[in-house]
Image 1 (tube, rainbow, N blue to C red):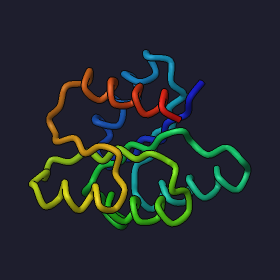
Image 2: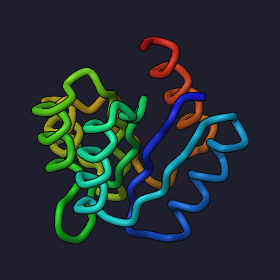
Image 3: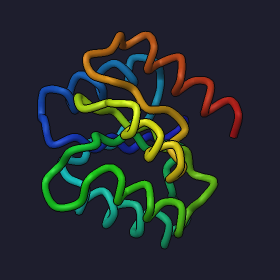
Image 4: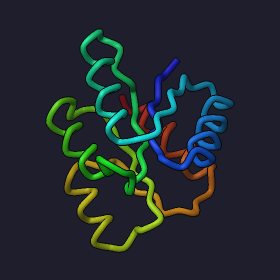
Length: 125
């Protein structure tokens, strides 16, 4: 079962995304901050249990989604990352893609769009 880490400081958004992807058969780990996400990624990688995909919010306290992208590109460049944001202007999209984001999704979004992107990324691994 493919494993997905979801990081968002908004508890309701995290829960909604987690429930939706669990219904699709994914193993989902919910994480409430960029700091915790980086710690979880490093710990999982150290024991050979890295996720198959990361979904992270752009704006979170401490470490934001762009910093998460930088970290992933350095430590696990083949790990796909989907960035979600309520602040998705053209420059943000360009920057996220230049840092390695597989997809950038603007909030609010249709859950079906996210599920389709998740499935496409998981199939391509």
